[in-house]
Length: 204
Image (cartoon, rainbow, N blue to C red; front, top):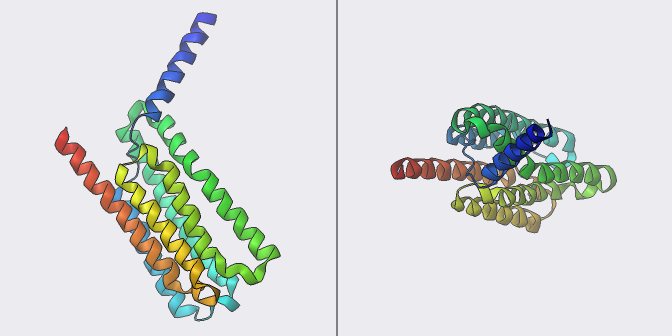
């Protein structure tokens, strides 16, 4: 029985090592492009219905948090189904690894939002920039198992986040301070995934 447990443990270790050295292909280009479109639609909705977001932060947060949750839901479903199809036996390990890369950034973003709004409400304008910086860091941490050009997306979000912070004040709450960075960023992710998947198929 001890030999059986040891063999199972060895198999589990091998699977984890394989997952750590395999490029994750669970992200679907079309779905990520759709999340970019959602960001543009959310920005348009804010521009129409919320001309003064600084005085209605709860509505502002409602728009963008609901957009983020919907985007995460679409991406999560696609990741699960696509990973099952492409990575087969390694799908569980690959999914767990992909999620673990983004959990710290997502948790930091949530906690930062709560702390700023609860204790430093006048600094709420910093949230869009901080969200983008943290999202960029999440992408950087995932680059080791994604196509190499993805580092450009992390740099994009870092740059847009810092630019948003540099703008300062209520201007940082402009709908386009979120819509453009996430719309362009997610379309860029989609383009990279589409190009690299085509390239991999050609090589195969």
